[in-house]
Length: 232
Ligand SMILES: Nc1ncnc2c1ncn2[C@@H]1O[C@H](COP(=O)(O)OP(=O)(O)OP(=O)(O)O)[C@@H](O)[C@H]1O
Image (cartoon, rainbow, N blue to C red; front, side):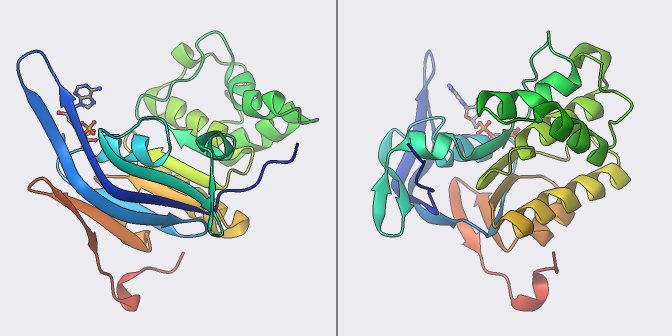
């Protein structure tokens, strides 16, 4: 059966907290925001403020303690599994499969979706991220930055409708970070994908159309004037 695309993600009065052995950690309370396909967003704030946790909630990989996360096509609510097939997720710890080569890690999302020419496409994406000379390397034979670029290729190779990226340029040198940012934004633009990035990089956040900033236990949308949004 064809998958109906999700075009909007809405968080309504969402709170997230965790109970550890002797205390509760409250990350945010009653957060309401929307994510729309085709737009770019950055989530910024101090370490430990809840950025990655918010990304996990938006992408449906975790559930909130309170409130509702809705996935919408037009005004119609869609089940979360409709979104799961349409997201590319770049994890902070990469999560590449250790037994597979870079080529097979990147080809995997295509193979799982039954694409022909999965390896050809994977090869082309690895070349785009500057890893054309590392196709046969397994993750432990790659540097941190190379693993990050392989994880980025794996997230983008099947042209997802939403790209969730946790510190996508965290391990990269300045030039590589700029190249990866160009790839993420051009993917967002060419495929009309939503791009949601957690980042400590001011340069990367400045390129997003909207910024959600964590500060003192709250998360707020930072209004940007048109001239502040750099052209992507
Ligand atoms: N499953 C969990 N159980 C208990 N505590 C958790 C869990 N997930 C996150 N936390 C806690 O919530 C806080 C926020 O974590 P999170 O990873 O969202 O922060 P962050 O803003 O992304 O940080 P960083 O910039 O350092 O990556 C941390 O103190 C973390 O220990």
